[in-house]
View (spheres, rainbow, N blue to C red):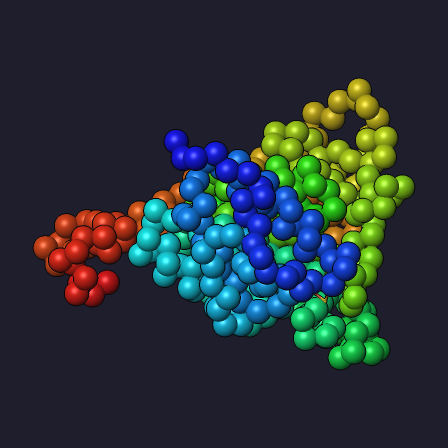
Length: 331
Ligand code: SF4
């Protein structure tokens, strides 16, 4: 049992350089609370980031950290976790950094199931470089580099990592502290790559892009909160349900108390992520946007996967790297 720590123990003396009212503040605040609750000594945390506004986060956490190169956070984190499996390694990235410069590294970390947590702050714009459209910007998004509206189809980060075989995938939103905190807690407890997409408002360059999911008057008609083994019901009065017809998601009316024997239920433990991918790919306003855990399954982690030493004995990466006289082994 380590010394109890509080959220304020993660404060640093660094001046926070995010714009006033940026969604990053809310994420940082919840993250500190969650870290303090994990019973992990502060010096065992390492936060690794790439480029972008979110990637400044390691400066504002009193832990070890690396502000690496654009798109390279997942690669650095993979190496670090392989050499030091005793550390709790977190990647902080954004839609530009993680889905642009570093998409390949991110997908490879996910498919290897490296035991790291990846938090992708998705504000659907390049904030740090002053507001160009990003790989996740919606069609028609007007920015300085797309004055007539973006014509590129956006990537959906959660859908993408599910296709790469991610073992834990969730989506949450900056302004819902309770949901954000619960999601980060679940990610922290996952063994393997835990990928969390955080919808984050960029006050300066894309303000209000998630208003449909935050406005109290409308959000329940536009957001479906996923719950394991529960039917996919949403709406202000919970009068809408999601069903699948010919593999296509369809919204139907539903009345509380009514039973639909074929009403699909969310299964975050499904061996195949097919339905989770459909849920992660849905977008408002045609469909509700899903928040919650899409997938949570167990699988061997990268550093526990079998490798073979020169004698032909199966060993994990962890064991190979930690045995001193094996440092010259080519793996
Ligand atoms: S540019 Fe946007 S994402 Fe970056 S700090 Fe400002 S509000 Fe936040």
